[in-house]
Image (cartoon, rainbow, N blue to C red; front, top):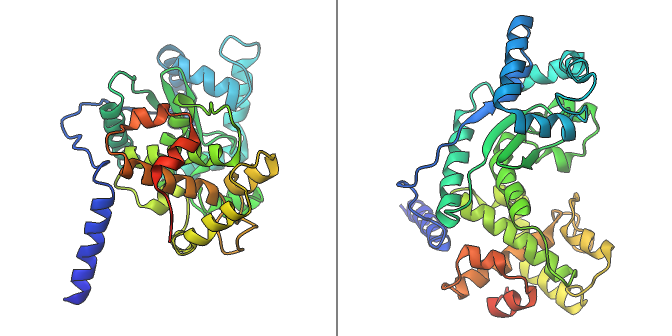
Length: 333
């Protein structure tokens, strides 16, 4: 009985923590369809492949030009030799094996599609005048996770085959990176890509604090779009790494303040705390990378809790990181 009570308290705690983000979006209508370009392209029957290519050319030109030009780097349908280059890519023996793996892992994409749709309902609730992009999936040759363009967004499914995918081992991808190349990362990565596209970094003071707050806004944005996701998934951490951050939050913050790191403008300092890495080397080998981003998220969460009159769109328009910190009342103990 005590154990059950403990579980109930945890659920209530999480619910209370995200009350501001737990919107009722059941009445918001969003039509989200995912076009599986990976399936259309990697059709072994030549007649079907030709008709699929014609369908892509006629119905999905905007996305496919983006994909072929910037991911595959073979130009567009109008480029000389385009179809030959595309056929070479599609018929490559290694890429064909990758396509088979993608088909196996993502044969049923409906659950992920529903999570994306739910996220766009939240997006529409906060930003009613912004259009919902058409969603596509593709095979990138391990080049790109998410791409955005005018009214379209694409997901490179070969970047989400699972941490133990043999292709990632062959490519020599470090474990700390492959650990995040899983299907559950698709939705947070998609909304993170929308954030950095729609709300690019524009702070005139490019110091560590400004970068931390910007990345904190990004994580808060993903949290707002996907309030049912665990913090660890949003942050891209393992449960163990998340636990380490929570246990060491106060000591990390104290170090940044006492060592006067917050207002440092050196690239190496920014990279150390906000860039992807196996750990944050000024803290501990047990720490995850991007701890500056996580602390930035905690500051933004504190700010939004302390200032309930501020809406998400208003937060994202704020450009003064120091003001956000000052008004956040952030002080971990």
